[in-house]
Image (cartoon, rainbow, N blue to C red; front, side):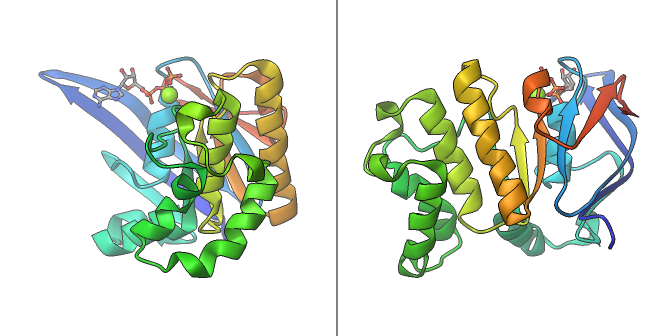
Length: 225
Ligand SMILES: Nc1ncnc2c1ncn2[C@@H]1O[C@H](COP(=O)(O)OP(=O)(O)OP(=O)(O)O)[C@@H](O)[C@H]1O
Ligand SMILES: [Mg+2]
């Protein structure tokens, strides 16, 4: 089986005026389907940048990202947006929930954006609400939820389209340890029971312990252990 995610000599340089900031300097990665991987490294080492490149949210300066064997660089805008909506689920550290939508509506947002009929997804919504333990909070808006509950809404939203891959940038970054470990248990279940490939960025050794492999970023390069 070819890796579900592959990067080949990935470089990313940001230009700030006359200064070049070389963030990624030749990243070669292969992540297999069903793996749960953590990306670690000091602040500013390029972890979020790498995650965004994998997800097609930003473009590399040079090198390639392949998802399911297909190069992102040769995809049309339409193909890329379909990939982002259907193959990938994103979980950001700051949730990105819509404040005036309730839990159900926030979770269903990708379906709406995809122009699909909500009715066909009612059953899946129920399953996902059970999975993340928010069935009794479905009518709450984000401000009426705790941080951990908001994070679970963000995970539920990433799952609604049944993506093969979940990309999570510090999914427990601003939660207390106990709540954070609850989220990690949830991600592990999604990985083990549903076979989803998960790539998380984390600063936490405890969170990384839930994954099968750690990719360490240092000075723009991978030091794998
Ligand atoms: N749009 C941008 N323009 C210029 N430089 C940028 C831009 N985005 C990120 N950088 C720089 O790239 C480097 C890597 O940023 P990135 O956000 O990937 O780090 P990180 O490893 O996720 O850090 P943290 O753990 O603090 O989230 C940083 O030094 C940052 O200043
Ligand atoms: Mg970051």
